[in-house]
Image 1: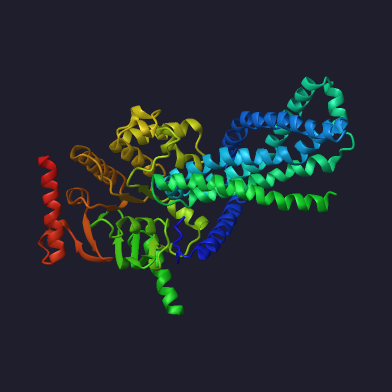
Image 2: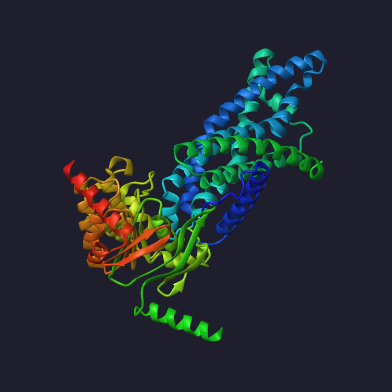
Length: 260
Length: 272
């Protein structure tokens, strides 16, 4: 946990140093995560903190996305005379892209900032040093548990967002033109298969890895006082959101290749 | 090379048997960027002995403690704990050695999301799996009673004073019954009465537990009260090593200035 001393203030050097330090951090966390003793109690606490407590926010965001998609898509499809395609358009938009990416961004905002600020505060008040001095591996106790909780919870939160978006999409459409839930779901999922649901949902586990890893990394390398904590929280949100969006590009391409 | 290894092994064995020093630091160097903090210092501490490390702010006193417990890596030199050189050990390997060391941080470093009792229980939860929940709770009560905090088990660290936080930090440091106690500025930021209470507590604990202790401080009064020997650091080197009386009698200009200034500060604090 010794602080890394930058050899130069050159931004290009700092950019590569950041990736190098991130790689070393990831390796240390991986090594700590797969060797006993396992921190199950802390993992369950983080599953609750990251999963249960993000649920209302993700559900609300999903519901809003469902309404907006229904309103916007309806307007466009009517212009092209394809109104009957509305349930399919909503279901595919939500399940393929909107649900996963909105969940990723909401969680990177809430959880990324939370983890970044918490660990940074622990770092500047020497609490992480105190954990290490107590012969407890902080990579295992603090980082591995949070990253694993993010990986496990993101797909479940995505399913919640998808569900709320579809329900509100149906409500929104039913208010404009009556349609039963059965017909909406039946029309929406017609022609859908395993490849339409599972890969886009499971790709959010990768979002979880990105969010947890970057937030823990930014938090645990913080230096300075309150300013450092603020910077760590901000950087955790900005960088994890950015890497979620960039990672999504790669993941969508991979899904298209491997699950055509 | 073989002879050197044999000598080193013999030395490790002697230290591990309890005949040699518990902590032995040799030719220790540490820099941060271009700033040299420690420039080849050495020290030894034996069982039941307390060494005070004195020096002005920024002379690397806290860094020295962090090097001894392995929180930072030295640039060169050796640090032997019970005869085992820890300088090259990885994080997992150093864990066993850390269990034998209690560390009191300068600002307590209590875990702010845990209660006072949970803070003290933290090392026990991780390293005494054979202990039942009730045994652990009993041990926590015992430790808190030892530092006079038995009635504050359920309080949060933010609800207690700085002096009380240091007491809880001390109880946590003693949880695994260490052989070595490292104290980083135990009286810093405390009023003279609280500082005196902490000194008395440290002295009593050291006498009861027979630990080897290293106390980093710039408080000469505190050092005089609790230490058997003192070393004074200046510009990364040990300027003087000896008893408090030897420090007072030194002809070295820096030592004289440090002692004079320290006593003036203490007198000023007492007048206030």
